[in-house]
Image (cartoon, rainbow, N blue to C red; front, side):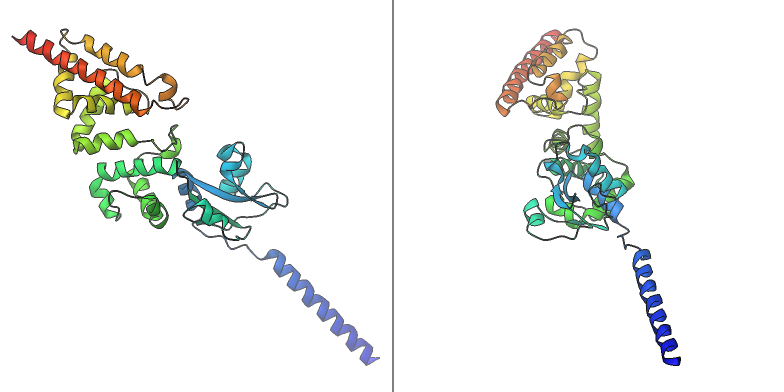
Length: 301
């Protein structure tokens, strides 16, 4: 009798132990990297591509019909719950150098793998390099030197993100031109003039003359190249604001540049003009500059 009772007690204790183990397993919290949301936000802003798990399969975001606009991607990135079957939680994001590296390894289903996209991340690099030159003293505090490269996007991602966060500088994610030539014109103009104050003056003068062109600054760069220097640029544009003798050259410049920079091209809805088309426009602008200088000299004599 005692043996039977003792045996029942052991069985009961064993069942309780098993139940507690199962309960502990069910209630155990998933350990999520506290930097996960930060990594997600940074990688999207920096133009990275992602590999996530949908319906039990590794999927590259750029291969999806809607890309980053896919509801599954937003869910994976910002809610951190996959929409596949079965749902799961992501615990970390790992940065690698390329898609090839990402696909050469096996990854746990709770890992988002991200790498710089050759097109979009180059645009982010352009913008970051522009900001490093523009905010040079601040960039030094974060250990960022010009120029940064694709490699820096991975190994120095925290410094780059913090630099942009503290300075409140450009948001590549909000720029409609998420391509390799994003911010390339701004960067080239600043490199040409080598002075932040002169750069700001050129941008202000361009706006005064109606050369706004939304986010694309390539036409302004083409004008500066045609003028060959900032001094000549201002020598021609100063009188345009008040001297009717050469004010008509503003419209001529517009006509030349708009012949290659259509509204669609400026809004990234059409291919950008070729190097040959832009070079031809610059030559036309150079000719107009020579004519404007001649008219100015004639009117002053």
